[in-house]
Image 1 (cartoon, rainbow, N blue to C red):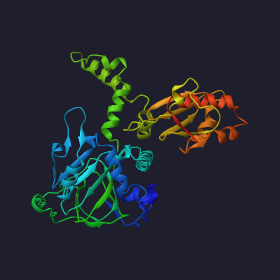
Image 2: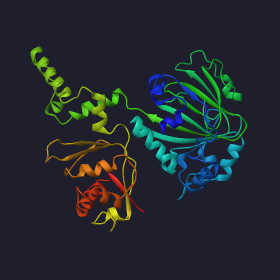
Image 3: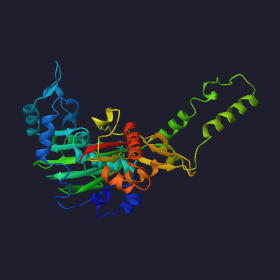
Image 4: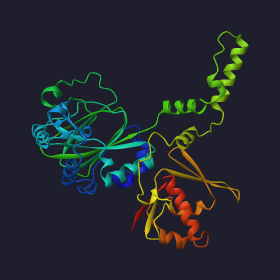
Length: 390
C-alpha cells in the first residue's frame, strides 16, 4: 500500500532519502485516492457522528472558531448544527474531522497498514476548505505527516525546520503566505506530500472546494525507550532502596555499579527491536469484536461457514524443542500456546481472512477439526483473531 502511495518513488528510496529527513512531493493520477473517501461519504459520516462534537474543528486564518458557534454543547445531548457549520465554511473556515480512520473502513485499513509498516501510532484526519483563506497558521507538527489530496486543489508551502526572520504578518489579515518557502506547490487530486516532523508549513485553499487526508505517524522516541528501561526494573529490590547518601565513597560506588547492572541486565544489542517487541510500540491495538460467538462458551460458530482473521502487529516465535510451546507477541503482550498452534498461525499471519473450511482442509494432516476449533477458540478468547460470517 505504501509503495502505491509513494509511486513513482520507491519505498527504499523514500526510507533512505526522505523519511525523518526531507519533504517529498509526488504527482499522481487524479483518481488514485478516490477509493479512500468521497464527498458523499464525508456527508454521510458527518451526519452520523453529529454527537461527537470533539471530532469537529473549524479554523479560520490560524484561529479555532468557538465550538458554541456551531454546536450545542450543553444539555442532555451535544449536537452539531449543520446549518451553522456550513455557514462558517461558506465564509472561509476550514473543517477538520478528527480520527476519521476510526469511523470509515477504507481509512481504518490504511491506518493499520501504516502502523504495521512504520510501527508507530497512526491517525488520519480529513480537512475540507472552500475559500482562499487558510485554516491553520504556519506551524510544525510533532509527528510525520503524509498529505493525500482527494479533490480540488490546495497550495502548500514548506519552510524547513526553522522560521527565523520569516514575516507571518500577511497570514493574519489576508492569508498571504510568507516569502522564503523551500517548497511552494499546488496539490491536485492524486498528489502526495510528505512533511517530516518539525518542518514548518502552511496550506491555503484556492477558492474552490478542496478535500485532503492527513496521515500522522507518531514514532516512538528515545525518551520512550528510557521510560521502558526504567519500567523494566521498577519491581527490583534496588528500585525501592534508599540512596546511600551518607555512606562512604566505596559504598556509593558499589551501589552505583549494582544500579547500572540492574538497569542494563537483559537488554539486547538490538535495543530498538526489543523495545518494540516487548511494548508493542506507542499505540494500542484497535478494538475488534467477534460477537455473538466470542461471548459464548464455544467461542466459535457451529460448522465451518465463517472466516478467521488475525490482527495486525503480531509477531511469532516458536520454541525449538519438539515438545515446546508456540509463543506469540502482539502489541506488547506475550502468549504461550500448545505447539500445534504454530501451523494455525502460519495460515493466519498475513492478516487476510481465511475460511474455516479451508483451514480444516489445509491442516487435516496435522490437526483434527476438534483440535483446530480449540486452538482458534484460544486465539478468539485472547482477542488475537476476529471472526465473521461468510
